Image 1 (cartoon, rainbow, N blue to C red):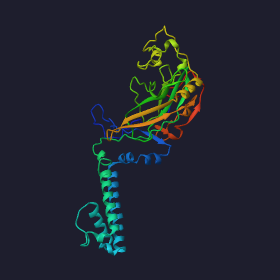
Image 2 (cartoon, rainbow, N blue to C red; image 1 turned 180 degrees about the horizontal axis):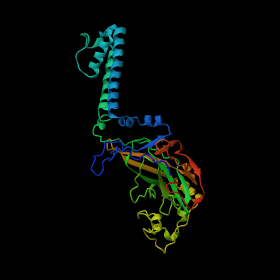
Image 3 (cartoon, rainbow, N blue to C red; image 1 turned 30 degrees about the vertical axis):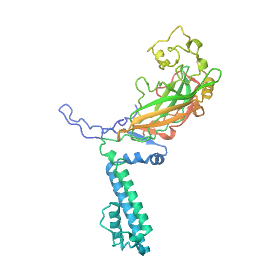
Image 4 (cartoon, rainbow, N blue to C red; image 1 turned 90 degrees about the vertical axis):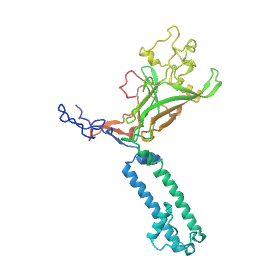
Length: 390
């Protein structure tokens, strides 16, 4: 028996109300996922998206940081005013100590308007004072807008519970492999921060040139939707981004990645056996599972080979575009991550190395991002594949 694992969703919240039937009901959940994440350049991740790093900081810590920023800016300009007062008497600043300089800096940055330290409110037309006052006034506006305005502190006040947001989603190299005689285009995504997107879902498109049988380009940069088998786009392609998620597209006769040379001539206009514009796209897996029927009188498409798929990518200048979207629970804004793949990015007949392990201490989930992009070779055609392992 494996060791007892920690709960996937914690139970460290407030105690549940006791009842006669449940004298020890335990505690409520705080909604925190018990996942340990290691590996990856974490400093780069957070510095590259500093805004969302800040709004995900605990509110007391962020308020203290804003106060410290104001004090630091005020003190910096106080020293500058004191230096000007000592070094340039013609400016008539009249500041004699750091305390006086700090008070004057506070009056300036907060526009209190008590007056100048001397009777010369124009400081003798001194350029250094004009520059310092301009810089401090401009910096004040940015601080008010960024720190006290809508960008940092404002989104924190209406928030409830935890923040669930990050855009640092890094899809690794995609792969194409054959399983039970069918080719699948597969890639993997995961949220690298602990703050998760709400209602995360994914869409994939193939952007390609439409080419006729004789090689003539008939239309350039056409967008074609790609049906997803995992997650099932019939159910809404939603993802639990706290864990690595596989995105699987079957290269069947409705797939824009499917070579036209494999389509039977008689099936090219039959919507039940192949893509026929403007009919909606189907999926071969729906027929395999008995959810719909083919037109038995029309020949089924031939199975493509690796060389044929690669030639189709080359001839049509194919690029697969993945759009992953979710909602930021802090601001209720929709966030979108975009990534694309071309033929030179694809690895054939490989599988991703499992990067989810059992933590040696908590016995809970451990995601190792150092192996998130790793792959290992597999058989050219797998008859059986363990669940969620491609």
